Length: 137
Image (tube, rainbow, N blue to C red):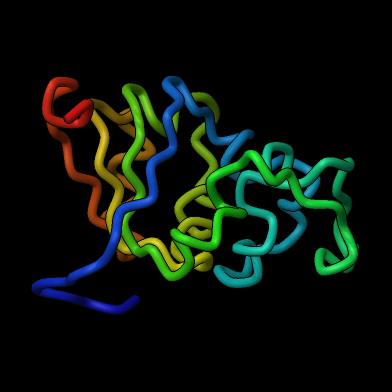
């Protein structure tokens, strides 16, 4: 886990509320207990136009051009800006693993699911809670 005291990055806006851990990393990709290799399947069902399975070559899959992770103006973003109740659902630790493996170091949202929030700290991601009004601006 990489420690940091400051960072500078553009923020990638994911304008959705109640994003659950199954949306963050779908269950079919949870075969590994290693903490790496999950980034390519982060938000898989929104990111690609087909159904993903472990072992697929993601470079050959059709991408969803409307999904923010596929927008080149946010390439390299280390901050994810999203809506309330991020990380709800099951308590899988694979969700922060996937976010960190993709390259996110911080997530800003009005609220987080409790278990997900604590798992972020354990896995090198800083979850930042800001009011809906500030996130909207």
